[in-house]
Length: 226
Image (cartoon, rainbow, N blue to C red; front, top):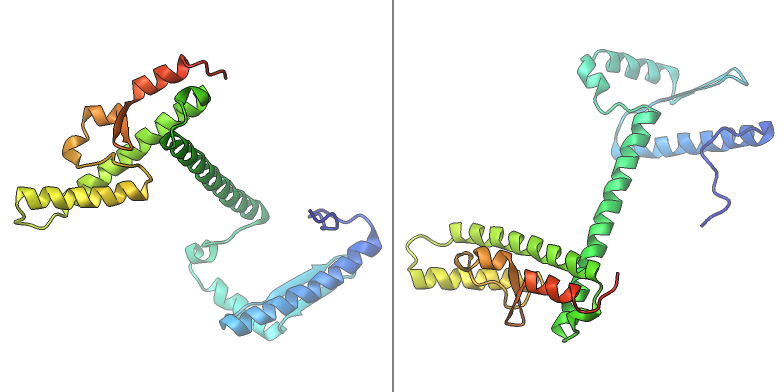
């Protein structure tokens, strides 16, 4: 972490504040000039410094006047479109950060669940897992099975017209198997015809049926401590 990073707050020391103003004003005008050249856009800046009674107008007063008049001729709805004050900007930025955190947590959770699945496939006893992890794992599998069922049903609707039952079943089975491999669930999906009530209460792991109720029962009675 950079301890020298400047905090976004009013600088109390007069000398430091004036130095920061001069430096950042130059940087702002330089960046804005680059933006207008690189992206071929029109822009202007008006900076008023009450301490020096200084008015900075960039690039020039005639250009600023022209752009202001052009802006004021726009309908009010267009003038306010994408207009942000500091509060709205910070709120929008905070929402984006929260969304990024949410996605990161979801990704970490999926990685943890896939790690548990891998350990089960390798033969680790369910009694060695935490009860909370098993419950999360069951919920994760049920969510994935529901997603896969919806995808399989979507694939069924896109099976070529005129295909026989055997060809249709093979097409669905192949597509569903591809989905299952992408989801890292082995041998668990055949077709939507086989994804009824039993599939929602259990799953197939390495060709073996595991019932959700049995999984939870074994986890709760296998000496697992929270």
